[in-house]
Length: 305
Length: 305
Image (cartoon, rainbow over all chains, first blue to last red; front, top):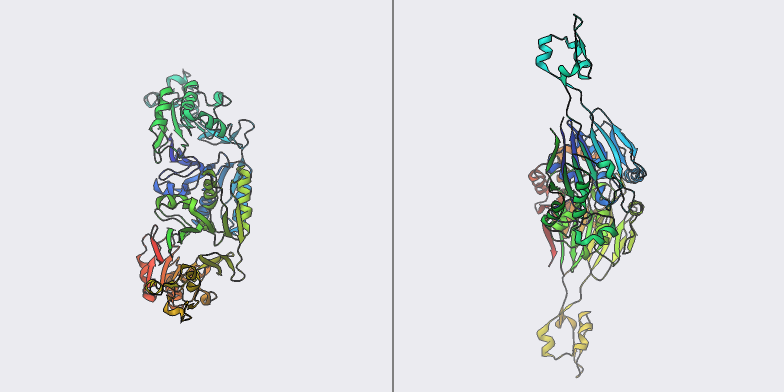
C-alpha cells in the first residue's frame, strides 16, 4: 500500500525566498492527507501537482501562523472549484472560530461541509481510524497548545500463496477467510493450516510528525520505532538557549530524538530563516543520527510502496 | 517626486501557478504604501526586493481572501523582525476583529502599534493626508463592501530659477517665500514678480486603484483625469453575464472606463485563473483604450519621476 509524504514547505515563521513555511501532503493508498497548511501551500500544491480535490483530510498542528495561514485560502478555492464532498479538519477548536469569522465577513457559505475533529494537547488520542490508517495526536511542548500526528498503517490481510491455492483447488468463496488467517478444511476432511496457504502481510509502517516542540521525552514512547520521523530542527545546537526560550529543537537534538527512539529514518525541517543554506543543520543531525535527510520542498519520502 | 507602483500579484481568487492574487506596492517619495495583501505577498516582496520594514501604510480594499489573506503573516513577520514603529492600516472595521482573533490564539502581542483607519463604502472619504500624498477611498460596487483608493500627489513648491536668483543676489532667507509664490522686493525697492524668479512645479499626479467592482459610473467623476488607473478586468467580455453575476468587470469594460474618464494610462489586472495567457484580455482592453498594459508581477509603472 502506498504510504509516502511530500514536503511542501520547510521553513519556520519569518519568510525566506524559495523556502515556504510548513506543509506536507501524505499519499496513503492514493488518498491525500494534508498536514499543516502555511501561507503559500496552494501555490506549492500547484508547483508539485498535488490536486486539492483529492484531499479529504487536513491536520493542523497548532495556531501559529506559519502552520495554518494558507488554510482559509485553500478552503475558499475548494469552494470556488465546486467541491461538494465533505472535508475532515483535525485542529485546535479555536481554528473553527477563525475560519467562521473569515467566511462570515467574506459572505461565503461553503458548498461543502467541513467536519471538525478538535485536537487537544492534554493526552494522546486517536482522531481518525479508517480502512487504511490510524491517526493519533502526539501532544508536544510548544508555546501554545500543539500536537503532532502519528500515522500508523492498518495491518493488511494475509497474502494467499497462489500456487498452493490452485494446487488444492480451493474455491474463491474461502479466500476472504484464508486472508484473515483461518485454516482450510478440504471436502475430504483434511485440515490445511493457514500458514501453509498464506503469508503474513508486511508489518504496518508508521510516520510521526513532530512540529513544533522543545526537546522533551514526553512523546518518546509514542514515536518509538516509527519508520519515518519528521522532527523540527529550527536551530543549530549553538543556539540551544534560543531554542529553549522559543520552545523549539536544535538539529543535534532532533538527531538525538531519532537515535533514542529506534527511528528508521529522520527528516528534519522548520528551519529558521537565518540559515541561508541547510548543510550545517544536516551535518549536525547526521553526526548523531546518520540516516537523516532534509525536508526539501517537492521531495517525496516513501514509507511503504 | 518619485511616485510609482509595482505589481506583486495580478490574479483573482482561485490560484494559478506563477500568478499571485492581488497586491501592489507604491513608492511615493521613497516611502512604501502596500495596497491589498493577498496570500503570498511576503514571498513576492522577497522576490522583488521590497523591504517590509519600509512599509508604513497598508490599504485593504475588502475582505475577500484574495485581497488580504497575506496580511496576518506579514504583520507577524514585521513583529518577529523587530519592528517598533507604528503601522497605519486602512481597512474595513471587521478586519481588526479577524486580526485580533488570530493574534489572540497565537498568543502574540505585537511589538509595534497598528493604527487603524476604518474605511466605509458609503461615501468617498479622505483617509490619509501627509506631506506627499492625499488618499481618498473610492466606493466601488462589489458583492461585499469594497473601496478602491485614489492617491493624489500634494502640489509641490515652485522651483527657483537659479540663474535669476544668483544674478539678483537674493539672500537665502527669501527662498522659502519665493517657492510659495511671493514676489521679491530688492533693497533698492524694486519689485520682482514671482513668475520671473520661479516656475510652477509639475501638476500633481494621481493614481486610481479600482478592484473589485462591477461596471458602474458611480466613481467616474472621482477618477476622471487620473494619470494612471489600475482597474480589474477579471473576464473577457464574452463572459459579461458571469462578470455581472459576480460583480466583476470585463477587459472591454475596463477599457471603456479609461476612455470615458480621460485616463492617462490603464493597467488591467485581477485575471481569472481560466486565462492561462493574458493576450486576449490585453487585446480586448486595448481595442477600446490603446494605452493599456497588463499588471505583470514585478513590473513597475512610473507615475512621476
